[in-house]
Length: 323
Image (cartoon, rainbow, N blue to C red):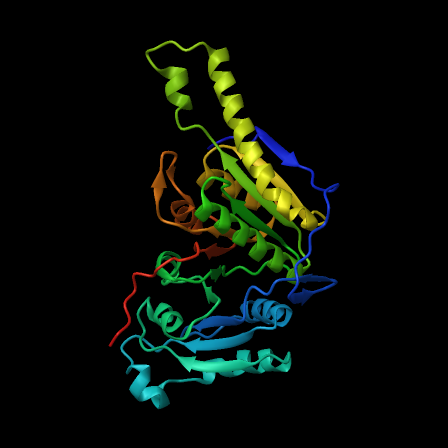
């Protein structure tokens, strides 16, 4: 297991505050992130804890909520036989959400396969999909065009922290925009829950092992200088990104860790008592290896908390609509 002893924590407490205009949460204004939240309702219904999360977030965002019933496997398709789908599973969550003054729409998915909710998003649109952990997790993570909040079975107490995972690179506009979106969403969730927010950036030099153990003898101090330069460059990129989010410093702790992201993220999540990890998910490779899409898939099965994945702007889902 990769050590997390080599670390750096950034203090943003003396930086100027930043506010955004839009949705209201507590005493601070910020931009509205979600106008429509889609809740996937499987045959077993929806857990009360998930409904409570959605109620808090939708109230803070001024968002409407769609409760999407997924038919039983083998049931008739929803477009022609919706009267034969059991909708009673939606009664309790609908009452709870409407009691909070939220607009709630009941809908039935046009199928029972793992892509049913994705097709609904592609057809009708949504800004966030919320679902309990289940068989559709990987399909939603890979193919859903909007952010997906996969809520773990175990319910932590309200107030448990948020962890935003970023991979800063100001020279990559796609990655830079995605990092900023991850931070805004994580901060919105932290505000609605009254929870602390941790931000994590993990760095490593893939060539380190080769430099230290190759047949060509490299002096240890030379390798150390290369590693120190890489750490400084990574820290600079992180500091540049976080400079625009200094206004959230009253609840934010920023961590800079050396290691492998898929190993460090679960460690930090456990140590900090994290309720939800917010992470970008994008499938492409560069000279440093796969970006965080692969990391998001890896940690999904190795952490005991909820995971919210965010796609880059312009992501095109490979799921095809039925005609």
